[in-house]
Image (cartoon, rainbow, N blue to C red; front, top):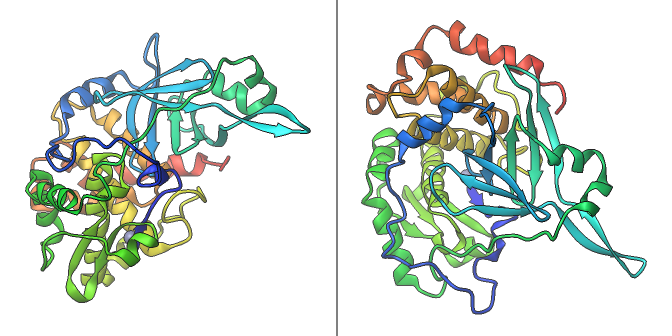
Length: 358
Ligand SMILES: [Zn+2]
């Protein structure tokens, strides 16, 4: 019952003389600036003049942004003002003594439902959903296409907190616990008996980003193995979901009836229902927090929910369950999500039937 480190988050702690971001002082969480996300979502998938996508970075819920190509790399600029991220479109391997470029992008599937076909690509450490795939489509259909690209490069990632600085790691957790986000999570799922702690040595060796210890009703996190504040928030929601599973196994079972499996074998929770459920809960939380802006068009919000659902099935049922909580009483999607099954579920089913390429 632990959120394991994603394949990509390896850099933390392994790089010699790695530079670390400001440790405990930098508040790891902050209310999402939902207004600008809402503004950008209005543009939808078919933004005139720019390529857009939703990127799931290191297994996290997808965030909107714009896409461009620089050299042999895809550049993703998150809408929310974080630094751009570069993903190399190929790796150089040596074959018969010669360097050969091999694409590092694969097509995971195409969802032809809705107004636009949505392409899902695996990048190294991310999954991109986009209706404007551009050169990515060429790279996956014709490997030699990468030979005509410029140099491939990747952006560096840094640990949130120095792994050698235990005090700074604890400070980061205290700062997290003091946020309105954490307060909201505790209102949804209850407050564990103990304050947030650090994952112990054994859990760290197992690569765990977080743990819920049911016998002590405690949550431990490992901020020094994370590279983004969003991971810390996600891990808190994920571990609290395990607390919910423990407290209400029957409710989870009935909610989960009819939810399909995760199709992507590289995604956390694949082939493990407990972990899949916890991810669906954390995705649902992220969705509800992201769509809290009152001016988000319902259509755009439901498209976005479908984007989450493609990555982690069950996000929709969890979002419907959570939006019924008093915390989300005034959420702009509350009435839509809670409407009798037809309007929301029918829309989802219609999408699901069309997903035939996975
Ligand atoms: Zn877990």
